[in-house]
Length: 158
Length: 286
Image (cartoon, rainbow over all chains, first blue to last red; front, top):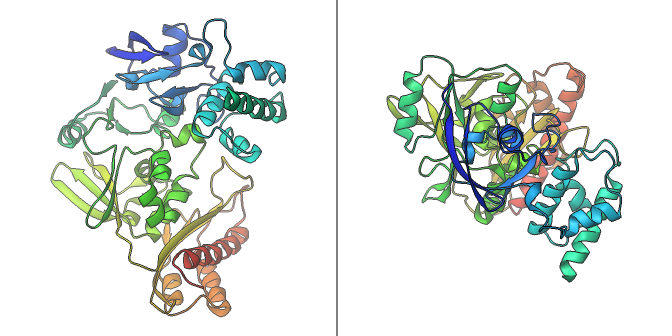
């Protein structure tokens, strides 16, 4: 198989890589670029652990080919904090203990960030529907929802 | 395996037509990549159609709407004019998968994946939507219901690509709706579903009607008799009873853990009644 040369932007940085045509963006991020925040849960777009934002759209990176990132802007969990300054969602996830094993957390944070950017004041129902594409087998979701609500309040006040 | 991203529909058709091994069209990839991962398909060629001019846009034409084959379903939900004209089609498209899937999946892909339970397809069939097919011998426009021929199979020939879905301009007093039954509240596949599209006369009586059922047979069902029974009525109880009976009778569902034949028949009728009521209200009927 011939490799595909890709030029893209990841978390604001210009990135170039060579990948196989059937390699997913998730595999490229993790195995070629060392960005291991996005996780592979199911690999079939059901669990959301691999969520990233491509050109402003929340997607499962396991359902995107690495080759498709050509010329796009990709945002991953690694770009969420500014240095030591955590994003309000990250801070609130810690304060509310909205994680246990942590596998789903990067996906939840990215999906919640996308949700709050599009809807800064979501109702509890909107949060639950908005995050329905992210599965968590530890928390029972309640702490996650509360963390997102709290972060939304902080971000509106900021 | 080769991955290509042609810039014209002619190039895409040409590459698909001359492909020797299995070839696949990639728009959103929410079905294709899952099938590749599961080993159900091992394409030697992947043709990414997202860079082809016009395929990633929704345009309003003199005749209605043209929805490019690479437009993600999320974009349909953000298009105010489309949502206002065809709320049933848009709500059906927006029921597919999660936010993550919505950012990628397309109605053309939903149609070409040819699942009997495809959410957007009964709504499109009820809407009388057309598919513009580009192929080695030129372009043709066909009814959406003629695309799926069996689960996972379509009537498209080698080298053919659906480049857009067409929806008519709406007259006054028109409305459509789509409902599905799932045992959860989101992130599930229809056990059975119904799409209804109505136009009314100036007195609120139904002038034209199309009823389509999903997950009720190997392919989407356009139930012509169900549409006919609605014509002239204002959705009185007796008409709704007949509608449910016709829909239940038209079903040829499977019996599985998600729903028995009896259950699917019954629910198909109920959903058709409820979708008809919503469509009627949207059309301005009282």
